[in-house]
Image (cartoon, rainbow, N blue to C red; front, side, top):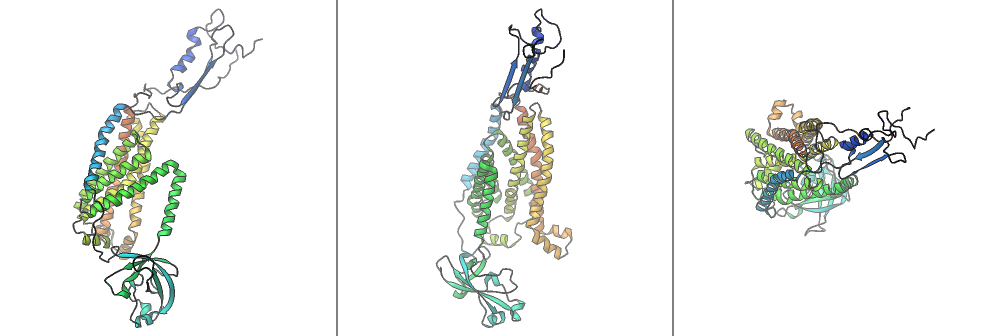
Length: 494
């Protein structure tokens, strides 16, 4: 009786005189595993294990075992493709840098404050005391400085209602410590409370007792706290990638405040400024968050093509629809202070900048999808990669377009409510310039987002598929790789 560990099972077939299998049969299984693409460890990460049991006479046993795992990174991009991508992006980056240098404004131009809206001097202040008084008595005494918090006379004031008389202390500026009074009517939406931090508007040309008035509530602390919670959540979940995202966000705000806005105020073409500024934000944010790689470069190319489409469509339809961009108090004030600014160009610049953030998300997602699909199945050609990734993109399109439309609708909700109150028809509402601006902004941005999905997916599929035979990657043979066999096979009875 023989022991199984000394004489393992040998498959039936022709035998040599000593009972061993011929070499062509004994090693066929090992050779097939060695030639199988799946059994070879992937470069970068992987391991293999094989062993054979034989008799003490030195002959091969005819049964071997192979075990391997392949978890290698995505295939590297060949030197040729890196040169092609660099030939496109390096001149573009150089053009952006030149544009930043040439159009750099050096700060917003100074002007005399008009005292209207946001264009007025303000100081920090604190409400020190609030007392109830008769509205009729306050009005009989010649009135009191009302500012923005009180407005014009109300029905309650005329009929002898109860108002609030707030004493407010100026905390900053040359008049620090000075106090003034503010009358708040009972029907005012903003009521003042003792100890509340407020913003006081200052008008130096007014009479001394009317120079200060409450303009708004100081919301700096809750806003800063909310920003801190946001930053903490991003860092906790995203870790190092989250930190880089916050840095890229800070850089984006820096470009917006130090270049785009001052350059437009200096009189530069808003469209040109928006294109250069958006390109700088795109390059910095994408490469900083996702690394300097071919995958990120493909996303940059897809974003650039989509932004160009948005700029072209926006320019055509803003001009065709005769949209002036001067539709509310804010734009009217800007046009009054800086008549040389092209307001329609400013509208187009807003469309481009507003679409950039969502475009980054779409292009990066689609590029990553193509790369992951290629890593999961390196034998897929460009057509297969495109078809698989575009199915992911269709779901992304549906959610992103809906998000964009609802975001614009939410921002314009008070305006839409006014039209609803007036019982205006849908055609009349859409034809008004206020709503037409939002429609053009939404539809142009959505078209660019929809176009970015097939464009970016096609670029990524072509780059990845063209690189399958690069050094360090597996060569496609048109057949599926054979799965590696691991562990011992079942023993059959002889």
